[in-house]
Structure formats: C-alpha cells, structure tokens
Image 1 (tube, rainbow, N blue to C red):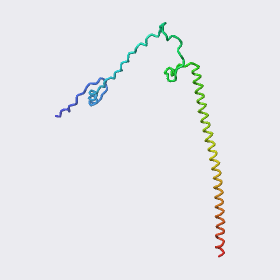
Image 2: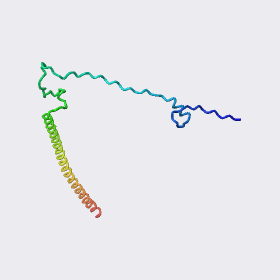
Image 3: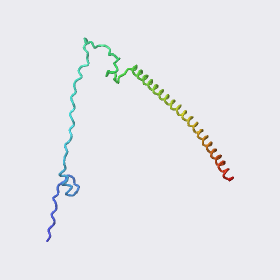
Image 4: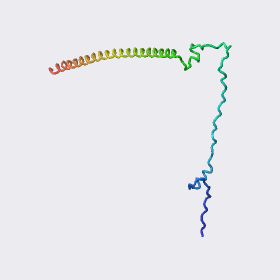
Length: 151
C-alpha cells in the first residue's frame, strides 16, 4: 500500500490568510533595520538681561547712520525716510537703465534704416546693370547675326 507523501511543516501566521509555506518561511527570516534616532537639540544660552544700568555710558538714542559695510545697515528694519530714499534710488536706476535701452534701440533703428537705404540703392544699381547687360546682349546678337546672314 502507498503511504501519503510527507508535507512540509507549516509555520503559524498572525493573520488568518492562507499562503504557501515558502511565503511564511520568507516572512520568518525578515531583516529588521534599526529605527533612526532624532539628534538631540542643542541647549540655548541665555541672552542675558536687557536692562541697562543707570551709570552706563551707552544710554541715549541709537545712531541711525551706519557705514555701508556695517552689518546693521543691512537690517530689514528701515525708517520711512530710508524706504523713500531706497525707492527713489531704485526709480532713478531704473530710469537710467530704461534711457540707456532706449538710446541703444534708437541707434539700432538708425543703423537698420541706413542699411535698408544702402540695400535699396544697391538693388536699383543691380537692376540697372542687369537691364544694361540684357540690352548689350540683345544688340550684340543683332549685330552678330547681321553679317552672317549676308554672307
């Protein structure tokens, strides 16, 4: 009598879905990667007190004029006068740039007109020469055929 063929052992799965024994074997050998850890935040130092002692020599209005290379001149906090000056300078710069572009455009236009006039002049001369050469050829044919026919 024949005995039934032995079946491979089955591994248990947490879900109730059915699958082959190969799939369950692969799942049991799954490699787990380490979970990345967030770096710790650096500790912040205290900015200190903002109170100025009475006997300090730095008491008084803060100067608003800074040298061009001074970092404080790049501060986004501007007075309305500073903003007006910056706007006026920007408009003047744009006006100068627009004027330069207009001048160069006028120069290009004038050059185009001069080239166009030169082209028209040369084209007229070319047409005149073609007509002249055509007339010479027709008169030379007349004179060339005249004596031959009389011979």
